[in-house]
Length: 339
Image 1 (tube, rainbow, N blue to C red):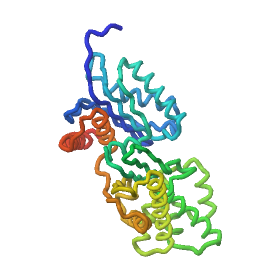
Image 2: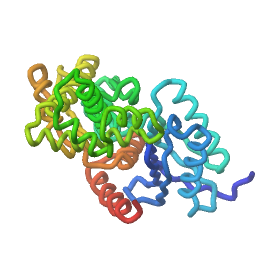
Image 3: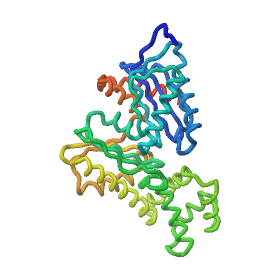
Image 4: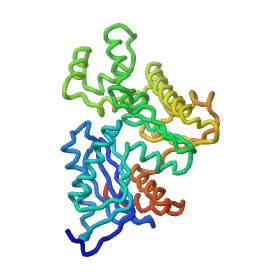
C-alpha cells in the first residue's frame, strides 16, 4: 500500500507479565505520545493464541491516534516467560506478524525477558545486578564488558527460590510435615490453615491438588509468614532465613560469573518481598557481605515500563539524568491516572 507520508516515533516500549501489559509511545524529550494497557500476556499461562490477541489489541490501541503509517525506531519489549532461545524466536516472530498486520514499521525490535529489560534500563551503562523477588524471583547482572548473566527465574516448578511463592510453598510443606507428625506443630501451621479456610491435613491435600490452587494464592501466604517472623516465631524465621540465603546464593553466582568484584558495582532490588519487607533483604545482605563488599544497594523506584523506555533512550544514545527525571514525572502521572 502506498503511503502518502510517514510519521517517525523514536520509542515503543512495552512491559508484559502474568497480570497485565502496558505500552507507550515516547519521544526523545521524555514526552509520552500514547499509552495503552491490556491483560495478562505470559504465553506459558494463557497460551500463544490468547497472548497474540492481547498484544495485538494493546499495540492497536497504542497507535490508534495516528492515521498515518508509523516508523518506530526502537521497539523495546520485555515479556514474562521468555526463558529460552525457542521462546525468544517464537515471540519475535509473533511481534513481526503483529507489526505487519497493523502496518507499522519498526527499525529494531529489542525483545527479551521482562527482567532483562528492567535491568538494562535501570543500570544503563553501569555494572551490577538486578534482584527481583515478588511472586517469583530472578537475578540478572551485567559487567563493564557488557557480558550478561542470568541466575534463576525458572518458574515455580523448577526455581523461584527466595520468592513469595517459595515462601508460601515452604510453609505448606511444613504444614504437611507437622500435620503428619514429622515436625512439631507451629503457629505457621495454624495461620496457613486459617488463611486458606482449611481444617486439617486431608482438606489441605485436597485443596492443593484441586483447581482452586494457584501460584498467587500460595505466594499470598508469604504475608502471613512475615507477620509471624516479626513476632519471633521460629519456623517463620527459618523459612525467611532460607529465602534470604537462596537469593544471596543467586547473587553470589552472578557476581562470580561476571567477575563483578573487580570494580565497585550496584545491586538494585525489586519486587514485594525485597521492597516491602526488610527481613529477607537483610538476610540476603548478611549472607553476601562476608564475601562481597564493593557494592552499593538501592531499591528500584521505577515501574518496569519506565525501564523499557529508559533502555530505548540508551539504545538511541539520547539518555540523560534530566531526561530520566522528566520521563519519570510524566509516566508516574499517566500511570496514576490510567492504571
